[in-house]
Image (cartoon, rainbow, N blue to C red; front, side, top):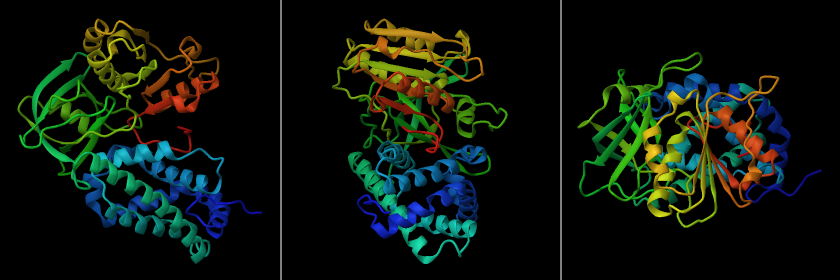
Length: 407
């Protein structure tokens, strides 16, 4: 029995995708591993200068690509599946911050479909199967290309032309291994313009092997003065995680008078400047950065807006940007604060989070930022307490495995 497919996918293609989706999902990791290996063999500059090598080493980038395509396909053949809107928005903004253009989707298409055939076999990926999945890919790609082109137009640039040379005009060091950089455009004809509170920039830095790696950093400060301010936490190696190629190099080597490659600001997890509804900001570790940027904006433009910050860290001495937050607290009379300094676990060792959503007005908006497991725990807790998913938005600094997320 067939069901009416979503617009853009005809019944024949929908039936094929529905029948083969479990097989594709079962082999997603193998498909994407093959895809990235062949892509970087043929286009080594992409691995050096565009893709995050740390995410590749940990496997988070391959899982994110695989899961996003599977989730999009599931929505096309099952209207009850989670909507892909937030997924597409997050990917589109990230792509814009990397300068992705439409031509690169052709390169991805070529190697992705070669990987699908290599893993599943030509006897499985027949011409009708290939045509159905080709249609899924281009529906998703076209949606992203349209979004990214709109973002470029709104920023006043041609597609991909988001990179600027910036001069470091100030550096402030936090005692726990965080540096706050202030940069200005080296081109007086093209100063940095405004941005929405909660957005980020990409920063590119040459590496010892000649690569140029890019990382995203949330913006601090108040938009509109021609400057960009961002915080960088030194990332040391840990089990299962390499040292931060860009963050550690920025922290160790960049100072006043140095120049950096930065992009225009992007990011979809932002605060509506005109809204008056209460805000609940929940963060962990360096995830407090966009929250402080939001609070700085509110202190300048809406100091009476009701806002609550709930932050988790290992210990009081590990809390980043504490001086900046202390100065803000005096300027925000409606700010509530709660600090947590250790992991909360239940009897089985699972992470828990004891925030009482009922303590906030029913129209409160929740913004979350922090490590992936923290976000999953907090979001799950809020949903269990009846907070509608549309009022929970998450920002994270690693690619999202959409198989584990309903955001």
